[in-house]
Length: 71
Image (tube, rainbow, N blue to C red; front, top):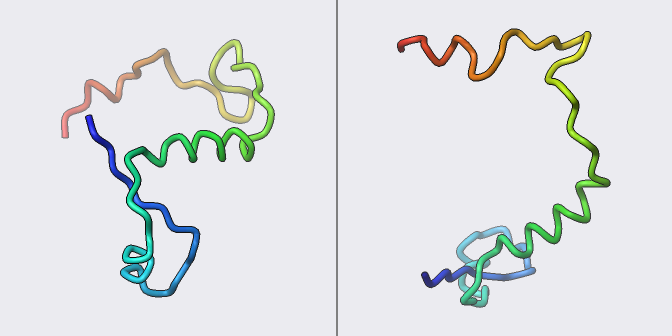
């Protein structure tokens, strides 16, 4: 699978200006995003032992009765 994305650090007002000045790269932006979110997201925390808390209690076991509702 060939993934092609554009990259441009400039932020012109017109998006077409950004596109025309961008470099086309054979890669995906997901790598950059994963690095960024890792730095911005803070420290990892353990998942709660069970869903909900006193303020937001769990209503029922997954998947929940709503999956049986018909639209």
